[in-house]
Image (cartoon, rainbow, N blue to C red; front, top):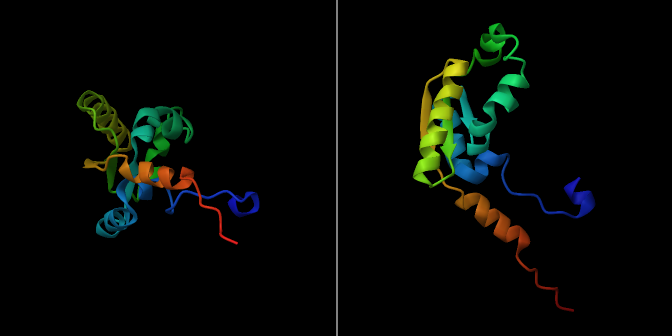
Length: 129
């Protein structure tokens, strides 16, 4: 679709690559293949985007079917605001508890996303000729 519309796509396989970097995401998966990743957005919206969309709010007995092969939740923290981090930390722990997994926290910042967006919107020089 991007090619057809001549639109550049953000780099990486998924948003996690933009925040943590592809090498870190690969390392997390290699170290523990059953890693469930969360971003700040997913922490804030977990109830709606995961629990409700998977039907776990209505059928909590399905939790083990969905999360049986996961071994941990890793929250990739983008915000650098201490108050926001504290609020999100509680929500991240709540999310991990809801799926029955331990929580680990990795501060990543939003620099990777910011750099990628800057690159996409940077003025292009016209080809000479």
